[in-house]
Length: 100
Picture (cartoon, rainbow, N blue to C red):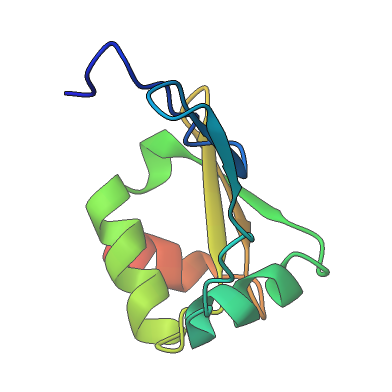
C-alpha cells in the first residue's frame, strides 16, 4: 500500500512525491513482443470467419487452432456465443465437425 504522503500515477510517465516536492519523468518502457504477438495482427488482414458457439466448444476450438497454427498466427473474438476467427486460412467444415 502506498502511504498517503506520496502520490503515484502508474499510467503516466511523471511521478510526484509530496515528501520532497519533486517530479520525476520516466521514459516509457518498450516491451519486446513475442513472435505470436507479431504474427497475430497479420492474420487480421484476411476476412474473418465466424462460427456459432453451438458448433464447437471453446476448448476444442482452441485445440484445433493451436494444432493447425502452432506459431500462434491467429486471433479469436467471442461475442454473443459466436466465434470470430482471423487466421492464415479458413477452417474447413470437416475440421470443425471432426473436432466439435
